[in-house]
Image (cartoon, rainbow, N blue to C red; front, side, top):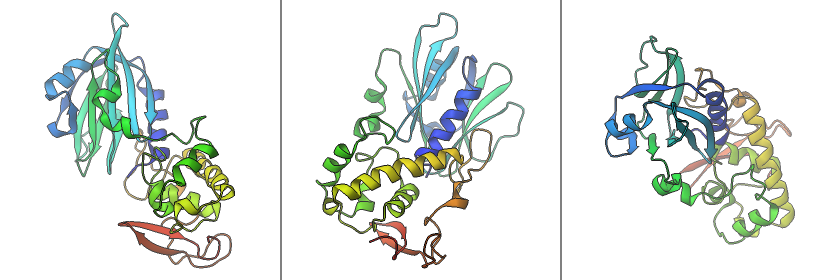
Length: 283
């Protein structure tokens, strides 16, 4: 599943290619991809004749503010969640359709934005003007702080973790704790902070939490700089793979030597999710 760095990479790419171009129409090839409005026709009608002013990210959600291309008045929001296998691709309209194309938005100039989604869990929303996005995209209401928020402090993280009796890896995957963090970067951050994934969250010291906060931000910044990770099928808007996988500390490196101490990396299961760690560097 794309995590914060992958979604941020997509957001940055979309802001380079889609802004201020009029949306001429579109085509919904899989109606259940549209979460709101209830009909695909209303979704397309709401976006036709609009232009995107900016793409934003909240956790793993993408939100585009749109305006009427003629009057410049607000035309609401376009929301996207990639879920497990979603991709947003910016392509020439004449390019043959990818096998799992679900939604197409046609832009002025002969380009289109395609939502490609093999597993079909991804969703798109058009939120009417005057309606806050979180009223329609209700998952936004449940998000904790973004790691890049000024409010993502040691104090915030300490309060969150000291209330939880589960393993730290499991708690970090809860989007109500850290918005956007997922399996890959939770493993990476725990390695950099020297914390074993099975450690009970409430038992962490303030010093450990300080290291963890720093590590979370560091691994996310490094992955964004590398264009994200391609362990499954992540592509940026130009169809290019991310590069972070080649420099990962522990994730997907079971039995390979630790990059610090050469001890073989171990893998275990925690609440149905894999956790990778170094038994020597993490305690």
